[in-house]
Length: 177
Image (cartoon, rainbow, N blue to C red; front, side):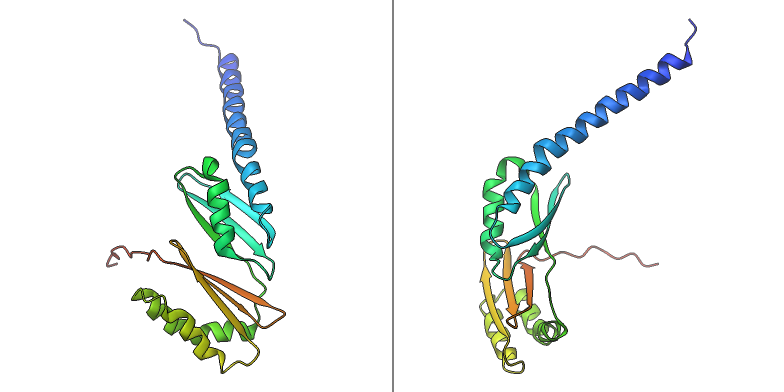
């Protein structure tokens, strides 16, 4: 039995194109596009980019100043449950921060990190309010759900959003090299 190279190569190429093309169409038409529409319908979202992985759905958002991330997250998870399935939803925020807002966050970060680590979430608004006195004109609001602590800092024209995961990341063992 003599195998001919040209028909084998052709069938492998055609099969690959059909298989991967079908997978790409399914991923784009049945997964990303509907989820993208759900995200864009959320009030307070200017732009979004979605990456659907096997275990995590990463949604990169550019918010408007009036964005309420607790409601946005809840709405995306509820409306997109058929698309998301059992994957984790991770929000990544691209905001319009300033050096002053970043400095304010840096000053409050130690107290916020301590409250997060000890799971005393009620101490977060108090820590942020205490630091607010050093930076007049800045305002802060905090909210919480079962997944994140949402922090919104603003100076009236610029906003900084922080989503602090309530589930702490565990560190693995570091190899001694």
